Length: 357
Image (cartoon, rainbow, N blue to C red; front, side):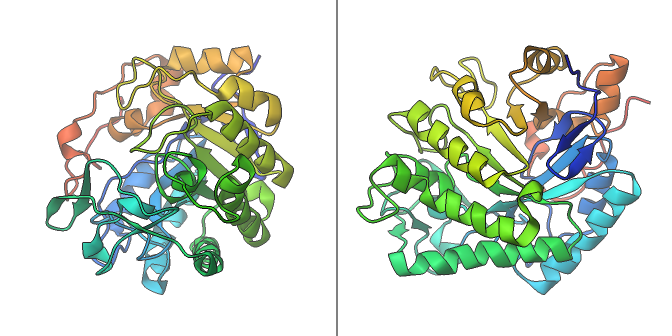
């Protein structure tokens, strides 16, 4: 049975171990959502992961509603990412870019108008704005004639990711953001080709993925799903039917890997009693499957040994343990993360966590 330290090919990407760094929003980009030297150091420090999945990165101004999160739709943003990928590669690492459209979770202050979604709905809680938290507002439904433009935004972002030197891309179709809003029946009330049946609701994720496979080749494209329970207000009455259909469609496209975020009933950052869908998804998705959420070294190895996963991804532990892979290998303790500095500006709680030595 494989272990965390056996190499694996995730599509065309050869990984020296099966410890992936999960995407983590950190909010350190410069004005204009431009990556900077602090971000270069942050990712360089974590290059010993088998593969780094970057923080969620906006594909367009329409889709980005998080202060100081990076983008990939402008030339300046693309140039800003180049030193990051160069540093990771120089440190013998691999890094892919996660492409993000937040949908109804984008506040009107970013675009001087409502956010967009599958339907005219309002997300729960608050939006993060440049002036602090603000109540979320009702989004407008994307028109049918806007879908080609939206897919075009993903294509341009994927092309820019290639120019920036990434090793591949991940499509963020999880966590209650735009593509997830199209997937779930409590946020998608459309009566056209993108709503109603499961086949229709998975259509946008499938079409975006197919378009980006044309840019990158399917073996350098991955997708992230969050198939069990509520995620930022997005939920579904039939998660097994929905997400096995989505996974089967992605298998037909032969993507490099599929990552699932699956919190349990005792989750420390989101929790649910809805059963994990990975066993059912495993039956229809035969390419590499990556599992995520509240994993330890022991539980990660157990998932590999049981055949439930081909690799595992760690999120929050990578905030405070830049050398997480080495710590797991050497059996050393993990440093606890300070939530108060997850999104604050500057290096504190970002690039100042030490290695175990």
